[in-house]
Picture 1 (tube, rainbow, N blue to C red):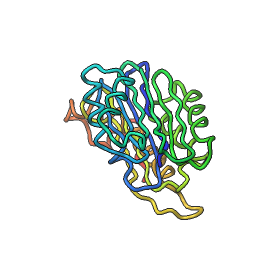
Picture 2 (cartoon, rainbow, N blue to C red):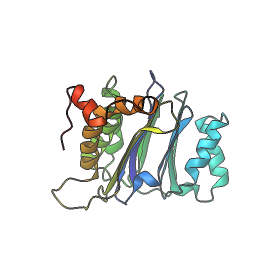
Picture 3 (cartoon, helix red, strand yellow):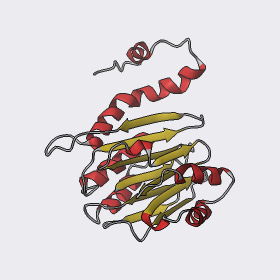
Length: 236
């Protein structure tokens, strides 16, 4: 019961996923990424075990379409799943099972998949697609965030938005951005998990270049001092 973008930045090879849903802790069950390999979200009636399996198949050189065929053969509940895959070459594939609830939709192209299930309206995924296309040239994390905001603003998950995640991998084995909102109470008129994720990204964005260099240069100033020197003092 989730709406998601799975994407690759063509110029840099960055791989990323951003999503939101009504249940708690979406970032712990649905998104899987391996640098220089690919990204997958397994959602709807989620089987988190399909994520690592898909990553291993991509590592072996399978195309995203081939991975979906292999997953179908290994999963008796495949018609309950929605799965989107983008590999390191920008090839994409998506599957929405026949048992996914209305509204379920997916759009994919070179370097991206936008998809969702049990959505409030049938406008959610097309609006996500528009946001992805129109944000070209922006920071990758900003693009992913814009897509989730656009989906939420068209209604998003029919049950609301208690959790959200935004994860990006560069060339290292660890994420360059790993932002997770595991729980926000659903209260009318109050910020939801998408709002909280957007606020977290606002605080994190200036730190991206710092933590790209810091693991290889531990003598760098502390993060707050570094931000001060960049003319971007941290604000709580």
